[in-house]
Length: 277
Image (cartoon, rainbow, N blue to C red; front, side):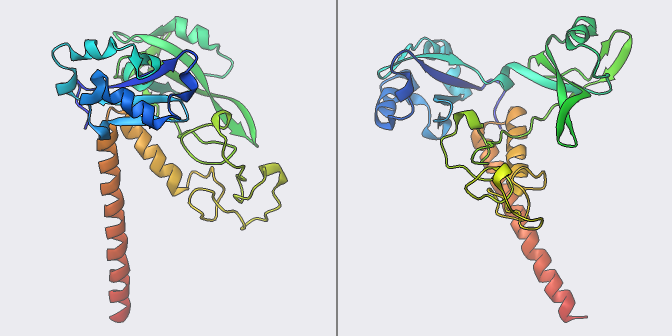
């Protein structure tokens, strides 16, 4: 699990050469190897080609004794000029309050809010869908400074419990894969309903002919029952709670192993029960 003193630093390229940052893996590796970032283990370096950035997970030993300041002073990585940021989840925590009528303006909610010692940074209305039509709900998403939401808050004189907000995994409505959105996608088109090479509006699949583009089971790609979506949501929840990338991967692998073991046990038990009935 990621320690309280560890950080994830996102390195972004700027300038004319920025677009080649993650598409030239040889030069990028050389640049990292020639910089102060070379002390970071390979397993703690993640290249995100879709967002054109590199994430470095810095352990306590790496960032101690003023080393973090030295790392952030690096202005070039190989041939690229770079700057830095941290994931939003490390700088903010997200919560939800329920039961505020959609007619209430979010700016009025923010002005009237009393969060005690917590600093409220943002307020946004969460949507809901009725008959396929998007509309505003009575749920309000709140962004707080720091990594911990308050347990409750006041809007005016009314007390509201603050529940942790778990964002759904990002889903591309072009290729249906998880982890990115359509605006950044260059992958082949796949149908939300049947995973064919066409749009949802062009789909002729009948009920019962659905095929998920991610897990290939009989449901549409955005189904909440999809094991791929559930797995992505579990990973995202762990990372939002401060668990590092490697720890998340190990935990998910352990969970999958336990599920397979349980399934094998239940299969053997069913076979044993049948043979003794």
